[in-house]
Image 1: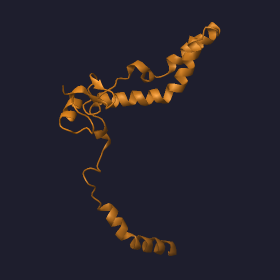
Image 2 (image 1 turned 180 degrees about the vertical axis):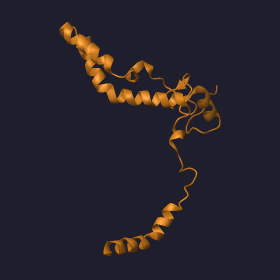
Image 3 (image 1 turned 120 degrees about the vertical axis):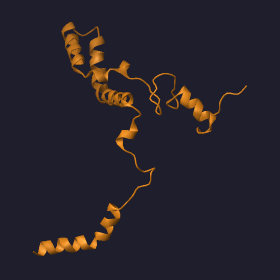
Image 4 (image 1 turned 60 degrees about the vertical axis):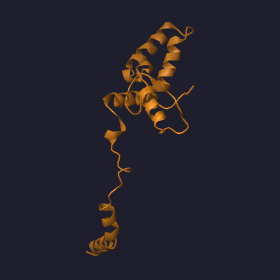
Length: 137
C-alpha cells in the first residue's frame, strides 16, 4: 500500500511536466518522418546498397587480396572465391549509383553538391546556393 501511495504522489507531482510533453506540438521544420528521407524507392535502395557495402568492405577487401595473390596456392584462392560468392550481392561496388539528393536523378550529377545539373542550375539561378554563380562571359 505504501508503494502505491508513493507512485501516486510521484505521478501527481509530475503531472504538469507530463502534460507539457504530451501536448507538445512540434514546428513544421522539426517534423521529419523516415518516409521523407528518400525521394523515391530507387534512392532508398541505393542507400541500402551503400550500407551493405560499408558493412562488408573490410571482409571483401581481404578476400579480394587473397583471390588476386598469385603466390598463394590455388586451393586457398578457390576457397576465397567461394567466400566472396557468399557475400550479399548488394555489397558490390559497381551497383552503387550517385543520385541527386533532391530528385534522385541518376545522371548529370554535380558531385560536389550531390545535385543533378538541372537542380544545380535552378538553385544557382535563384541564389539558393551560397557562393555559387552561373558562368557569365
